[in-house]
Length: 419
Image (tube, rainbow, N blue to C red; front, side, top):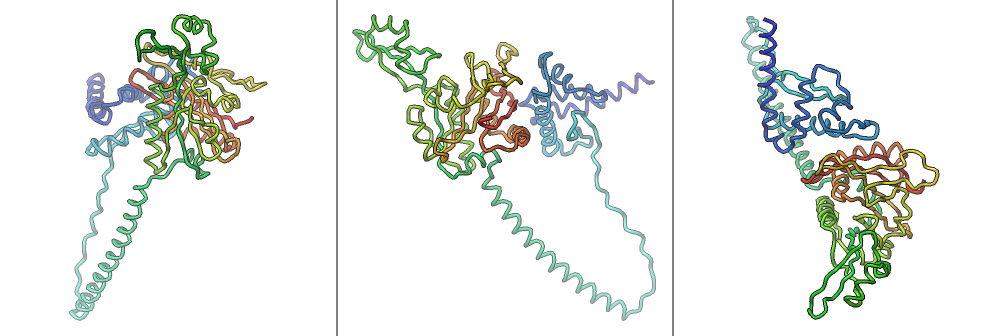
């Protein structure tokens, strides 16, 4: 009998879980489906963040919840996805899954329907005819008063609804972008153009070929390298080519411009060869790239204490005397999945009029996703607040990316600029 009861309970649980797993709400997120199944299988156990990370999310055994918010981020996304399911596809579900705030335990509860209480049985009594007429007049006046009050309430409600609709039509910027754009200056996105050395092919008018050393980002240094001196002997004097951009940086810039435009913030896009330093005296700039491709802003990159090194695979703390978390390294999870560290820095221009936002990583798409996602910026706000909410600051951000794009991003550390 006990075995039979357990089988019935298991079948009931499967019947209840299947509509959620197979829904359109979860169709585009296999990672959240897997996490939901894991939490369901362990719903009666006390599971740790470490267990969830290593058993459900595929993290390595070195996972440390103090520095990696993966579990909290994914649990929050799963909580929101469940709420969305029951608001839309699962409205008719009598039993519902939820994850209470502050926990990662899956809970099952029945939907409680509000049942109107039955009115008490009426008592019949003799009422004089005159009293009945007075009461009829009273009820009529009361009905008219209620009708008038209802009209007033409806008018107020409609006015408030129009206000809300108007407010919704113009969404408000979050705290990060409000702070960065608070000086009221125009904004320009700087797209890096890496340095290429171009050679003309002798005897073939209009034909050329180009070379680039990813470690060198200025023309005089590049042409002085042995390999380019040898090429010059064979093909003649080279010329500078700065009309190409990195594909990933280009798409990241487009995503950021679209995001700001949705809030009514117009931003222009310019090349890194278009005098970015001089422009900082009159506008804000957002520079997207790597330490190498943003060489035109080297004077500002030198002021940042968290720097990208070793082919953008490591963020290293170069502050003198720093002994805590000296490095943040990239992690290869599989052939097409990795975690890349990056640096975001909010710096003042030399004139203290314009501001510079450096967005540097091998995965600039990940950092732009971080800067345009409410959940990620909320996580950053907590770390920023602990540092005293500085006006200018540096951030280390991890971006988990795969062949299909950005999986998730999270802040690792925050430091006030200049400390």
